[in-house]
Length: 286
Image (cartoon, rainbow, N blue to C red):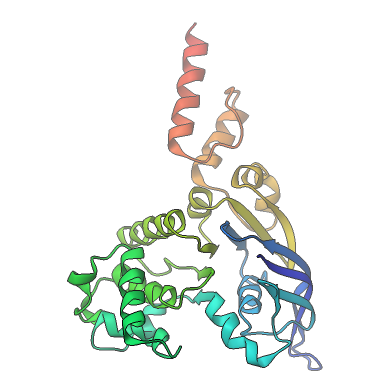
């Protein structure tokens, strides 16, 4: 079953001088098992959209469905929606508060009326899904971990709720390069090893290009473009017009093409670029 947003409009501060149209006639479908990236300039509506997906906000117009359940129609079903759609905000480690990692990850499941045995199983599974050795990490204080490790513990806390969808809002914000690589490596492995649908909101064009299957571009509250990373980043001029960049390697390839190099479009990795450049050098030397 998918997440579906149909004819969504969202207005902040309706009826006041500060009225803002955050989302305007948005139509999106995200299928089970997808890895989707959402990109857009600041103020494009990204954060508002993902909060509609798990009922933190309600649309002014239109409808959002999660696995066939209409979000916001029945307040009693909001708890189920929020279990189904796990949302990890920026800097989630600020919400860590227990004395051990295991207790922190168990906090959500404890509110689901589960047996202690089931909670323990979920905590172990969630920590292992984000790349930890359960026995080595479970009794550690979350406050003594590195930034990347804290972020992974926070993500494990959401995964312990067994969501069908995991939404990550700028999951590497504020981390150093090692922490960023650590987080994205584990997110990629998580998607490959589980049935969780991953929705990644990020300003990093490189990270989106490397990780996702489909990109949704928001601009001024509308879905401006959507497609595979290669399809989206081949529209470099349009992305730059709306205030977005393209991955550095795609920018380099575009410049080489402008200078007469016969290199195919849609290259997003260093390995692909290296292969194409070597082919072109050989052609020129023949």
